[in-house]
Length: 431
Ligand code: AFD
Ligand code: MN
Ligand code: MN
Image: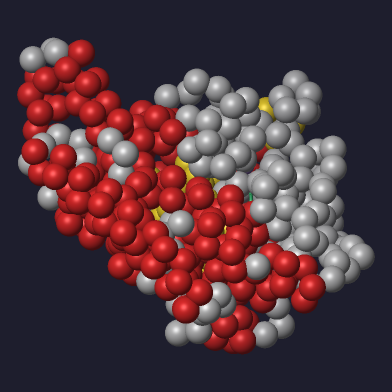
């Protein structure tokens, strides 16, 4: 497998930090042993953990007001894949890449697949884009896409999704994520029920084009760009649509797509209970769809989500396999650094949730001991598992300190030289 940052450089970096890591790992192992937990079991679980990176995340994102591009941003999908390869090389936690069409369209999908494979990467769900117009497009999505009043506009949006499936097939993807911005900005602008009927009829056509081993993820979002009534605004609508469409349709939970203070872990539990939890877009937010780095604002919520996932995995076994993806917009950080840190934060919540004493939790719940139930969760959440994550990385060939190693490698400065900004070409879409 080819690596972008030289293996010697990573080894050199790790050598400097190894003694400290070994000491921390041993101390943590001793502490966990006293709680009846085998640290090796957790480290192995951390090594198996994977979260996909969105191709659009390696470019600087934007707000509605402006985009301030960074140095050396990728200008096409091949350069994006190089950045994704660096993220995976150092974290060993992000082997999947989620592409977005037409932003990532290439005339040479074979070369793209080869490039991915040479870096040990594969393609996760592909994303369609009917929330903005592309140059030369016949029908505008200004008034909607899959729900548009105009049948020809709907047909165009349906065909785009079918094209995405076709492209994804050549790349080895196994799922299509559909997020639409459709909705109304004024009361009365839409017949609320009619819009959802048109959505379902469009989605049925897309569903019919899914290969047998594919899934379709329906991504809901509370608001924006439709500020009065978003057609697929909540998990209830998403769930009803997934049920109506069939077995291959599942719900995708983007953490930012809910009203502040929504109990997202309960949504996760509900979807898991009814076999409709397709996957996640991890990010964090303070207000709305902020797309901030995972775990940067509310790491406890992330832990509680993973606590539900651990519970579902215990109940449902290997059949329970939601797709994990990041979906963030990086405005003030180096996107590679943000994605590496976020992957580690998601992995951290996953490992902490594995540590919850589920037997004790059940006993406390059955005894109506609310305080001890909460303390059981907190005990896992308060445990610093950084040494487990670092050990998992180093054993898999990654870096003990991914951001430190990345900075020392000079990758960004080299990218800035190799990728002079081209007018009108951006590595990022609007997220
Ligand atoms: C938009 C949506 C959503 C989606 C992303 C990529 O809010 O999060 O996943 O675009 O399609 O930002
Ligand atoms: Mn999303
Ligand atoms: Mn979003």
